Length: 329
Image (cartoon, rainbow, N blue to C red; front, side):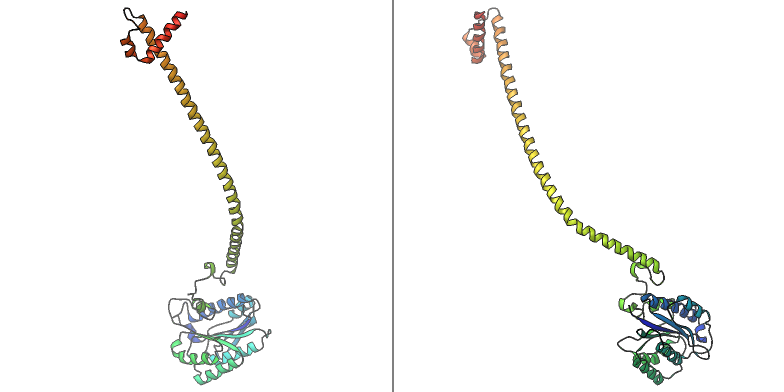
């Protein structure tokens, strides 16, 4: 944050009545002065801003260096459109105001608006620019309205005053745009260096227009970043503990599968054994039934070789066993 004392010079001459800038050249300057005051005082609480009106019979100091917005509003309330502009004299008075600033550690800057033709010759402006550079005063010139007629003089003036690229000339052509928006996008407030068009603010909110909302959004973003850092720190621990539990579950599942497979195999084996036992018992019962039926038939000799061959060796064996049982009875 730059510690700086700034004097804003407003062109309230009769040329500022023109309505080619919304709503008029004068009203556009008043809005831009309020915007620049908020920018400077928000950038550093120790920054101070003063206002000079260079229209009328002679320039007038409306607001001494202050950081109180109420003082600014009261001083701007006395401002009106009148007379002609005194571009060079207004800058010299601003330099004196900065020279007597209370805090000598503040850097010095002048931001001047010009919306009327500059009557001072180019050589005088160049000498004034060199004087500003010698005294360590940076200057920003916002040229609009009569920017074509003043372009050559202002370019030479800013070049003479420029030191380490700390002075700027901003030309704003007429059109359906707001003067303060064009200043916001310029190098005066850092817009040119960020490549913005005046509307690309952090979180989409202009901190100069709504500082409380911008602060709340910034705090919310910081809390979210802190939460993400905590989650990232706890994630490796959760992953390691989860891997250990997963291995234990995997080992348990393998053991359970082995036990289940063994039980299934045992059940199948017992089922096959039961089936074979039932099959042999059933066959024996059938053979006994056939032998008893043949023996009960009249005129049929159960010992006939041909009949025995037809029934097979098992039938004969079963018949012999049945006879032996009969004899034993």
